[in-house]
Length: 291
Length: 291
Image (cartoon, rainbow over all chains, first blue to last red; front, side, top):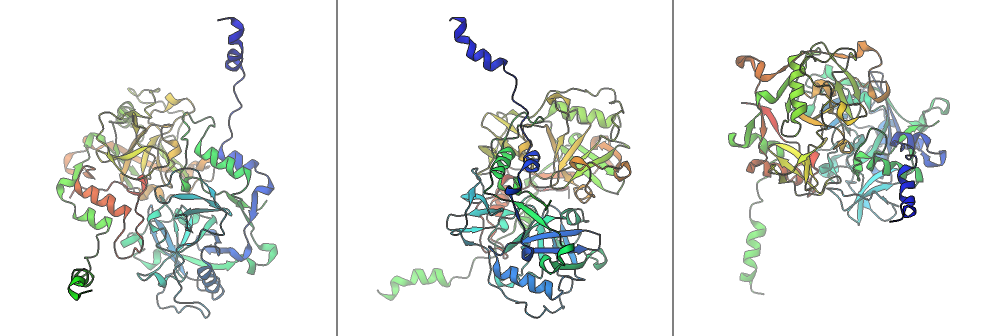
């Protein structure tokens, strides 16, 4: 073989190595303003906790309109003010709002709502994740939300930080008066068995680091162990000057595609073997305070 | 149609409903003694924490023999005694053992070990989970451990409570002197990028409820925030009378098959729509104190 035939190959081999690939975090930090959408203040539930924590929850009326409306009415009726976190079950959920079973629901709050476990897929522009999922034939993202689908209907999956509606045995007994968030491995078996109403966009640490309850299902056995909710408000009721503003990465933005690709294929310096895939709940949608 | 032709159908319809299906927890509680294997005290790392927590870790020499041997030597050299939890990153890991970078490794401890990211699949009797996985073509369980495989090699996946070996950039820099456990959604992108050496079988709550670190990667910024490790021992060094004993459900036991089926198909009273599948890390292998 003549030497010249080898040259192109040699050129490739001896070229400078490609620059280190960006980590998912670096991709998020470099994303342009156009990659973000604002969280609508009408859909932003703000909870202040007695431990100093501030929890911000984006509600999802596109998936659970009746429950989101009920939660707004509960907040306006001061249901959560003086209520408490009553349950912390390790690798499962933190639950709040049910501290006093005798407290009547505020006026305008429905005691029975239809289950909103799924909605039509039609009308959602789902960006497919592109990787296998144990639970659903299609998973991906729509309008900055993780979504699972059987092709016909769609639902919000129980990923870390998602917020759902506690209920009793009958499916129509969830009102939003008791809410929970996922603090462990995604309990996807709850998908389509409970109404999911949103996700925590800030302040998760104020809930996840709480002592685990020692009662059945992680309920606190002594009311003194409960963490009081000082106040809950819908952001649009907060004066503009003091209103916190949040953003969610748009799932139709090129930066989001880069982010998901980097979550699936870590090529930044630490990694020696990119996975080549990512689980829906292991690619959490980036959120941030508005800059 | 003659009435008699309908009778068999009517008999089915009017028969008493089947008894309520058992929950996964009820299946585990009812499993016979033969469904459990003991945790070998030579593979049981016991850690006492300054917050009163007792953490028990089963080590996995079948997957990381050199690292497990090194961890035993670290414990015998009292590496962990007086060391601390230094990092708590929400939805990711709790890490301990690296409180003092200048502390020399005890005698008999290797400073460089080969990476033990995977092992041959051959020799493992893997019970396939039977459901899709985003990361591996085959997932299941072997000898009571969750396992992922590409068909040729096999590895311990980063599920909740699994314990891995912190390392610097070069793959041979993990010694076992710094360990971490997963406290959130399974970061399976770490699979085959870090040596996994075991899993927590008891005391997880003593680590998961810790305040999250506010430094980069969740490191505590003030050494006063660290949680001291009072003492670490290998159970076989503990006098028999005071030695805690743990058991792991055998993954080849019929009760384990029932448990996995119930995790995939919740038919107990609360559930209206069984998922029909389960993710590897959402079917944690049951563990318990020996009765």
